Length: 115
Length: 112
Image: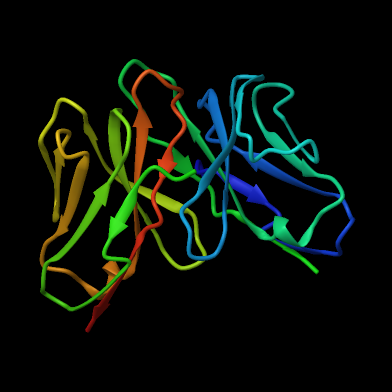
């Protein structure tokens, strides 16, 4: 399977707990993106990496959120002290930086429920 | 904040009919893309149209772009029940990063 994978697919946690999600992009892709999607809305950009460098962070990414891509391959998104408002689908996408290609390939998402 | 607004929010048609969805956006773009999302799943890229293009086709899909009106439309011809999904337009802003800025989507139901 050469698609984007995310783990876990579902996570239920209690308010105040920390959670970590993992994303494995398509192997040759050097860009990796995180988005968050709430019910009935389109995805909203959180952050993206080119190789291991985090190039942009959204204002949505409060100091409770941190993302890493330590070796330029997989990425993790951690949410500390979760709040009910963090309940959402967290989507990862990857792309290959070329001169004219902007298509992003999305993973199946991790659905987070904070109780 | 979300850049695009799709119209209508929901659309229900019969199999074999055509489905048209519209998207408006606010700022200058590099390109505009359409994605499909089946319920509770990830997004699938359908088609990309660049800011200097006016129309593009891919199979049963036809996309138009009017940069003067900051709007795009997606036409799905001869719809099938399997086309039932949410459809999102997403823009890549001019001079900005390559992040996608999505609209709220159109939920399409194709009845067999």
